Amino acid sequence: MTMTESAPVRGAADLPVTDVEILWERLARVEQRVRHAVAARRATDPEPDDPYRGQYLTPEAVERVLESRDAFAPVPEGSYVTESAPTGSRLARLAGSFGLVALDVELLLVAMAPDIDARFERLYGYLNDDLTRRRPAIGLALELCGLPAAGSGRFRFQPSAPLVAGGLLEIGDPERPLLSRTLRVPDRVTAHLLGDDEPDGRLRGLVHVPAPGGEPDDPLSGGEPDDQPEAHRIAAALATG
Image 1 (cartoon, rainbow, N blue to C red):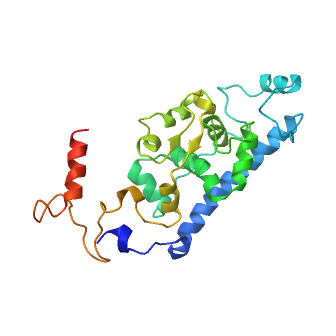
Image 2: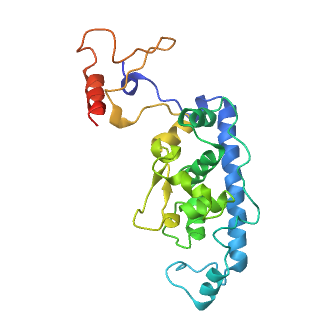
């Protein structure tokens, strides 16, 4: 029996309330850091409400850029990465399965926020100095975690880093400088953290799960060779690269 064909979709209401509360509490912290960043930007921005911000630079804006913080200096508040996800939560299990450190979890939450609360789209557009870019750029994500742009935090976006290698984070705009590239969390990852355990639609017919309370089967062992043709095709493809 395939999960995609017969298993009911689990929604956030079916989760233990503590799991939902943990996720929203962590996102609330991200919101507070965004609020501080917006307030700091507005305090020094000569035209904070300009709808064309980011599309041109006035002399005042040039001065503001030149006076902005050094790439090697952390933001004034310092690093916000102080704790891991609570043990037993979906966020903690995800972190453990993919080998994420506390900073990875924080970056994941910053990138995921617009997919859960649409307000972040406009706020990130403002902080990106481009209202058409409504997902966080790498530089902004580091800033919201209290880290300098030229620090070691930027290495968490390398292709071999857990977030990227594990498919938990997608980096767009490859033609742009690293700090200007945007971050996106795949819908499947966000849905999982919100309580939906349906596998990716691309795996339809390939993923099999045991009945509730049953033991998982090894798709590549037991039974006749043709019992699991899809699994064997996947194994063969992986073996050949």
